[in-house]
Amino acid sequence: MTAQLIDGKAFAASVREKVSTHVAQIAETHGVTPGLAVVLVGEDPASEVYVRSKGKQTVEVGMNSFEYKLSAETSEEALLELIETLNADTSVHGILVQLPLPAHLNESLVINAIDPAKDVDGFHISNVGLLGTGQKSMVPCTPLGCLMMLRDYHGSLSGLNAVVIGRSNIVGKPMAQLLLGDSCTVTIAHSRTKDLPEVVRRADIVVAAVGRPHFVQGDWVKPGATVIDVGINRIPAPEKGLRDDGSVKTRLVGDVDFDAAVSVAGAITPVPGGVGPMTIACLLANTLTACCRAHGFAEPEGLTA
Ligand code: NDP
Image 1 (cartoon, helix red, strand yellow):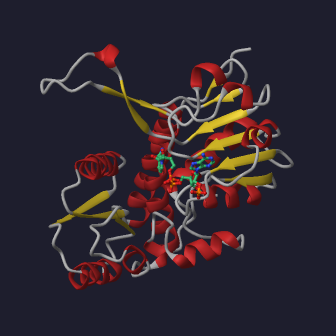
Image 2 (cartoon, protein in one colour):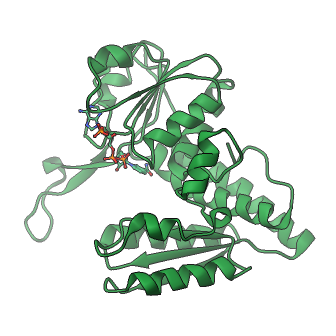
């Protein structure tokens, strides 16, 4: 058996298309353009790449992008002041503070200073509570992207056994809540889980969010199961040769041993080109949702949990 590939790149393009169409509609009907403010503190190169890509895609779907690049020495007070200003700015519908923050800044204090209605990352404690109690919330982008792909592939998820490997606040826990919301029977596995391979073998749906290259083995996967690989890991790729500085080039791999799992699973997301592209697409979807809720406009179908 060869699993069907779930093409996150194509799916993300279709989400952006839907967002773009709806953005044009509300601009024409109501004269409102959704706006996303992204705040980057410090010069972390990976974060700079993400922020650039977010800004570019925001503009491409017709929304306003506001970027704030602050020095690594920015005080907590100054950052909180900026967030207050963005909370009060009616042209800003979504606020994202790029994580991680420099060590002297208190991440949860900063995230919880964002107006929950503008918290497009879904990390504010109010949104965490709303999601946990099955109420309308802003949903974290990566798990939302996984949910969209699962719904698209399966239709109904009701009654399926889902195993989420990883219990982080950003991926594992919200993913489990979303699957529960769609009536899956959910198991959350983590580093203390006993006999993980056996736990995974019971799953109709496996979501791997561990941060360890090729961690999930092919023979852990139940034949026909759907495998969603959230992991983004960089490993040495000597076959690609050396960089100018003499170091070995690298490549991206997921948390699943793809080559082994692809012959057992029913469907699987590749890395790259699976969950990754969906994360920014869902950020744009969340910004549009936040804008619609702020103004009382009808929300687009299929872009929220
Ligand atoms: P964290 O490091 O916060 O969490 C990792 C989780 O994996 C923890 O809950 C940990 O368990 C669990 N874990 C670690 N080792 C084992 C083990 N041996 N057996 C079972 N569970 C284990 O990572 P994140 O959730 O932030 O990210 C996970 C992965 O997803 C990373 O590769 C990250 O790069 C990627 N990612 C991808 C995104 C995307 O856009 N595609 C977005 C966000 C993340 P415990 O709690 O017990 O320590």
